Image (cartoon, rainbow over the protein chains, first blue to last red):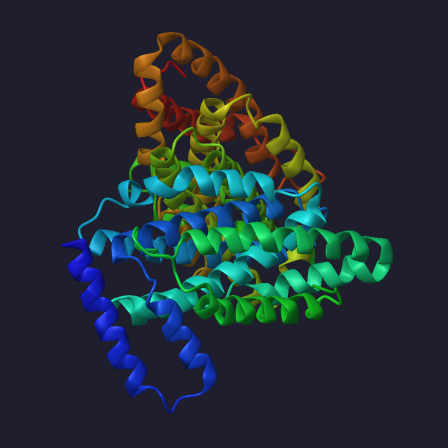
Length: 240
Length: 240
């Protein structure tokens, strides 16, 4: 059944590719990723647990904020990620799946990831929130294109709702402007995060057991994800 | 201006007391507390920062949950406290106040409180979430009766929205039933929390500089808060 399902989805995506062939280049890239979207339960379980990890990272930054103004500024960022998580879990329930069972396959890797990217102080944990929310929301948003119609739109609406990056940028700029050495340290930290975060993204792609994804075809997707990441690092004056 | 304001509010509350004299006993108690409600900005600033502390405690319990099912069960509890915080902050903005300035007078004491009640492990932090959210939501709900009409109703609606106690109870019962020694330790921890939490409540009452609140009149309020707390501890099979 799984392979039939996969084949039928790829077939549908190919039909879409043709229909959209006159669209700009980024749409073509999106379709390439949509072909590797796993079944809805797997997608939602993974995206939900990753979102919970983003929430935990932000909540930690709220709790360890050095002053109440930063704490109050960041708390809406926690609300945003928690709302995304809630929305993804509701989609699991709506489809009749137990959310925790659906997340079970991703908890160990995601927990290990969150531990690895926790950061040594408040500023590093802010950069982590910013970088991983930016990259992973962007990634799952693109991957959502391969979900069945209806679900795809709802998940995109959830993930497009923003991740409070502007708020985090304001906090980071304040710190970096008053201490240039902090900027160098955070640029280094940002670079370290990208590799780990892209591995999380990579692990969410459905790669049929008997094949390997066409790495050449994946490359433009990851190039685009990294380009968006570079723009986010530019926004805080750091080299990606 | 402050003393005029205070006098006019007390006058209004006395009028209410008479109007409500035929209501059940708990209403009378509520009015007694409403007479000590500070001005709206002070009330909202204090209640909001306390709610943020509750959120941080719950978020920590989410992050340190021993298994994904507990983590997923607790995350809606974090949503509830964050929504209350957001609502209180929105009321500050609506009245034209800077939320952070309004919270400023309460951050040091509340941060110290949160540190003191953090708990040694996940179960203790769960009990903390349960006990402090129960007592302080209950307390600020009663204190909201002294707010101006309109605001009082909106704040009550926010605080009455529930604090996810049933979810926390389920997690605690699971742990306690499989390890009776855990129950004794948590009962002890719960008793330690009550004193610190009631001091937070006590500090939110407006006591005019030249007078002392009538402690005999306050007593039934705190007796009632503790009775509700005792029922919450009963729900997890622990003696308060």
